[in-house]
Image 1 (cartoon, rainbow, N blue to C red):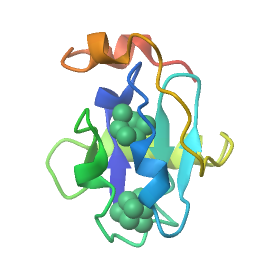
Image 2: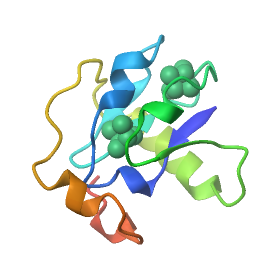
Image 3: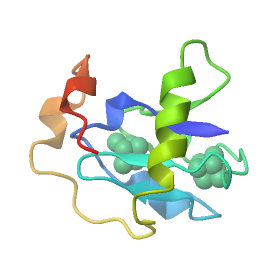
Length: 104
Ligand code: SF4
Ligand code: F3S
C-alpha cells in the first residue's frame, strides 16, 4: 500500500485525490490519509504530490504512519474532488517535523 506522510500536514494540495482510481483518500482538517485496505498499490498518486508526501509503506520507519493512515481513514470523510490548497501551503512545503501540527 501507499500512505500519506506528515509532509502533507498544512500543505494538503489534494492533487492526489484526482488521480486515484479507487478513491481511497480521506480528509482531515489539515492532511489527507490513504485507506491501506482500499489502496490497490498502483502508485499513480506518488508523483502527483507537490510535497512528496506519498510513499510506499515498504520504506523504513513508516510503521506509525501506516497506523495513522489506517486509523483516520476509518474516521474521516472520503474525498474525491480537489479544492484549493491552503493559502500558505507553499510556506509549509519544505518544513520538517510537522507532526506537532497534526489535527485529528
Ligand atoms: Fe490510490 Fe493508487 Fe495512490 Fe493507492 S497508490 S492511493 S490506489 S492512486
Ligand atoms: Fe497531501 Fe500531497 Fe495529497 S500534500 S493532499 S498528499 S497532493
